[in-house]
Each structure stands twice: as C-alpha cells, then as structure tokens.
Image (cartoon, rainbow, N blue to C red; front, side, top):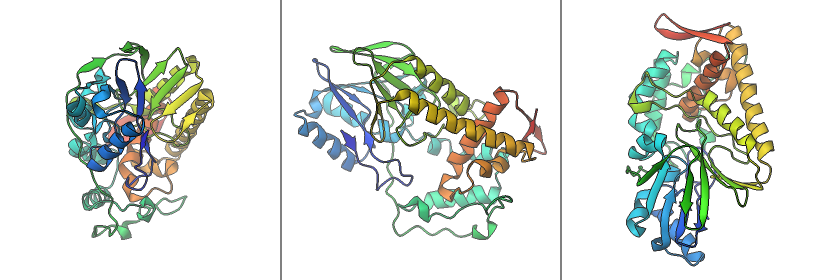
Length: 355
C-alpha cells in the first residue's frame, strides 16, 4: 500500500510506500506515513482493503525517522499495541518526531553562515519557510543568475507573503522505540526474517532490509527508482561540532549493497526495481559527477560551500537552499576524504583549497 503525498508535499517526492507483510503471526508494517488524520485514514483503508485491521499489526519497522516514514508509528502503536523497531543511531531523531531540521534550526543557520551563506539570504529563506511554501515548488524564485557568474539575486530578497496555495504542514510525533537493533542483525517477525543493513547517508541510522529467501530488499529512501535521495546533514546529540558527513557515508552504503543478490527492490517512494546494480550505478555516477563539479569550482577559486553550491545546483530555488547547502557540504567532505581539497578557517569562514 502507499500514502499519496504527491500533491501535498512542498518538494515533490511522490507517494510514500508502506509495506504490509503477513508473517503468519501478525502483520509487519514497514514505515507508516505522515502524522496526520488524512494519512491515518488512508493507511487504515489500505489495511481494510486487504482484509486486515490496525489491531492485526504486531510490529512497525522503520527505515528511518523522517516524518513521512515514522509519523504514524505512535498512533499505530496506540491502536494495536505493536512494537516499534528502529536502528540504534536513529533513536535521537525518532525522539524528535522526525523533525530534526526544525529542532536544530539555529545550528543549521550557524553552520551555513560559517560556510559562506549570506546572512540576508538565510533570513529570506527562514521567513519564507515560516510563511509556508507553495504547493508547487516551481513557483519559488531562483537564487542565482545564470552561469558563469552565479550572482545572488539580491533584488528578490525582501518581504515574504504567505502563498495563496500554501502546502499543509504536519508535526511529528516524538516517541521512544520498543526495540533498537544494529547493523547485520536478523530480525524475526513470525515466519519472516529480515536482515537489517545499516545504510547511512540520507539519515545517520537509515536501514535497508533484506529477505534472503525471496531475494527481496526494502531500501527505504536509500535507493529509489528515479529520484536521487538527498544525503541529509544531521547533528549528533544536537552538537554543531558533531555533524554527519553524509555523502561519504552515502557512497559507502551504496557500494555495500553490491554484494547482495536481489530479484526485486522496493523503495519507500515510486515503484519497485528489478535491477539493483543499475540503480546503484546511476546513483554513484550522479554523485561522482557532482563531486567533479565541486572540485572544478574549488579549482576555480570558489572557496566556500556557498560559492561551490551553484556549480552543483545552478537552477536552485529558494525552498531548496538548506538541502542544497547540506549536499554541497557533503560533496566537499567527500573530496576532503579523498585528499583532493583541504579545509581551513580564514576570516571567520570555512574555506577550501585544492590539494
């Protein structure tokens, strides 16, 4: 079953898929959807259409703690008594109800200012975020002039009016899991066993799940059929000095999945995939291309994350600023790990130089 979020999310990712497995000893639900009445009713209707009820759900297994995946876990637990399971490195974010970016808003602002984002641009983004995004992200203004200058369009920065067709917002549902697990553990649900594969990058504790007997893998937001998942930027223990290095993590996680033989792959958005290796090639090549673009920018004396960003996202719109900054920083992390660039502080900013 899936929950249709396509017309409601400010960034179009399509439906969120929630997978129901009859284990012979109750239902296993993988991911839940957003914490909102309309999606709860969709989830319950989907169960009814398959001859089940919420009380039949015995386990809720979460790929990660983003609100569109974990939002209804607490409500399902209340309705069924189900156990909620999540990877041990994702517990912090489940306690925040999948709303990490909102909880750590000031840390993101501080970090992005350190990496060269103009203060007035951050303020413009935050005021627009508070006012609410339009349903269609394409109505948001572009941040940069065309190449090669990529000048910030400061003439656009000013008052922000709430859009007439504002997208709805949903709060997360903070909760404690019943069970946490680690990488490689075999999780038993009735007659079904799934191997937990820690695949960080999109979030620090993101997991994929492999059913060896059928050679089926559930990849959450790690591998999708068409979309390129955004490597997320997170603060561990809400500490600005302990942030994730998402793109290197993501690339290692993609490479790890090459060892698994799969007949079908189910991502948390879009449809199923038959060829995992081709999907991995697509994603890894995409990020290699972006890393190469980031290196060219640094070689061209673009020495902050913000100045590198338009080389990766030349058509960036306002509502994508924080995601794009996080991913650009991740690609610079990747280049730093490969000893292709070096980072240092100068004039109060983190600056990069080619090695």
